[in-house]
Length: 443
Image (cartoon, rainbow, N blue to C red; front, side):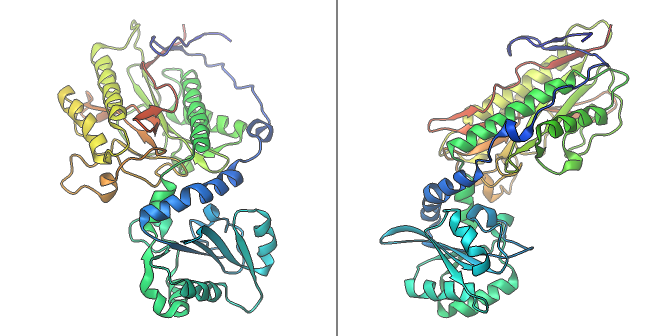
């Protein structure tokens, strides 16, 4: 192809030479490329290995999830209830003999559910009988101390039980209703930790997300390309590889060469020399695991061979904040403390105030369940920012530097990477962006 893309080592300068004639010719077979969906086996392992620990951490000895057709519980596919037709009751409990899972399933779905080999027992409920009533009978006999149900005022994923479902459950439980507690903490403890296999999938998603952004920058023709055109290029890559959006399709990817727009869609703004381009992009693999990565570029003006001094300083400051946040991540540290680690550097570097949190959990959704990495500049720190980081948690997090543009608007560099908390600290899922990507016009 005409023009060239100079991709050197991560420590070296990355300069992209634009080529308006670049076309994507690679085609793949997504099914063959990705292979069999690993979720069924991972789900079984999560239930058998992580769920008992989560229940202990949350202080409950029983968890009841009620699944149904069309308006299902958000936790349904995590427990095997995604194909529920009639109402089914999924029961997880611990007693003197250990951890158990028992499902009261309508007969029409029981055979297939049993064949998944997720649960210890799948009990068939004949037509005209109530799965919830039979689960309630068992619960009363076991005399559980704390029975978690999916009613929550702070976590939507743990709030799947409808008002009428709860009414029916309480009638069936009778006096045992006094033992009902919210599953908020249980769901938090369970979903916030990822298995090593899941971390590897997130690593692959992050790598593709970052690589495709670099490819997208190679399509930029200053004075001609628009933000929306670059976004469409990334949509094409997603289609070729058979992956879906990491968040709302209309705002993924967010390509922005103008002033800050927050979470937004790409517009028809033409990319010009002197612009700083932000791409905020995430993909979903196996319709399950989500990435969230940002890459930044600067469009060289005529005669420039590198970014101006002030732009280089903004980039260096943002990167320093990202590195400080990573260094602060370790088991036992609060999310608010990670945020504080980079806010100190922002203040020293003269950054304007940035209202967004330093980071957030990422995994099954872009803003997943887990500690919030924010709140250090707020008088009212949200509860999630007071949560402790634990080994196996995964995050997307930013290093910020915000400045005032010549027209009075603001622009923020937010060096967003992904990391996993380890036993001794944290590590990037992929190599971070070390240098500001530089784009020059075609000769």
